[in-house]
Amino acid sequence: MQCSIALMQPYLFPYIGYFQLINAVDRFVIHDDVQFIKAGWINRNRILVNGKDQIITFPLKKDSSFAKINSRCWADSFQELVKKNLRILHAAYVKAPHYSQVYSLVEEILNYNESNVPIFILRQLELICKYMGVSTQFILSSSINKDNELRSEERVIEINKRLGSTHYINPIGGLGLYKKDNFSKQGIKLSFIKTGPILYKQYDNEFIPDLSIIDVLMFNDVHKVQELLSCYEEVIPQ
Image (cartoon, rainbow, N blue to C red; front, side, top):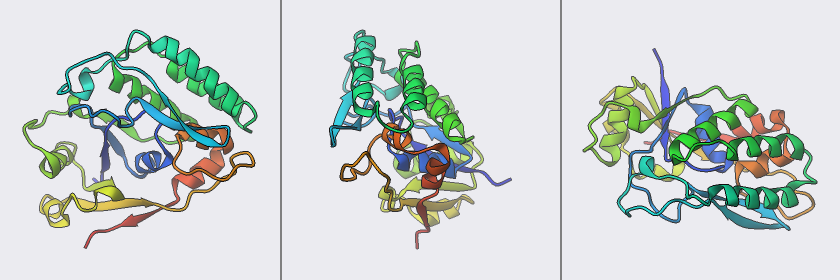
């Protein structure tokens, strides 16, 4: 039986390339049992504010710099920041064509009563995918019985084997990290997704690429979003 998977750290309202990867596979593994790295996209993302990109951030409880992602929780001030960021989103997108539906979706996501970050983000991804008509299955890597001493490519191959994968798909940025032959020896095809030109109308502003999926959904109906999800090239390494 053919089975394709992808593996990524949990991101909050990620850009459309992240969802292209989700849409391309049968099972999407949320890589939550690795070290949390500051200044990433786990608790923040970019939106459009007055024609410019602006980062919105949600605070985390202080923890060890060696803590894994699956041990991280939202700070006690999280709900206050939710209210603030919802006000920012309202002001930024109230005139967008799909504001009503998408604002309600974001509000439902942010009001979910769950302090654990990857579990919160898992539900976020499920709700956004349901809205877009994407039926990919999500799995937390921490729930997979595997050798947790393995690192890098060996770890990825191990996760693929444990899930019975026949095809591993990765963002194009990882092209230099993995060797086709190492996957082939395990009966796993390796390929990469390279996002194509994504362009849509953001009010009357000059287009700003790679913003949060919130921006994509605010300006495009579901049919158009599904077209954008397929706007990529599959790259097979030599």
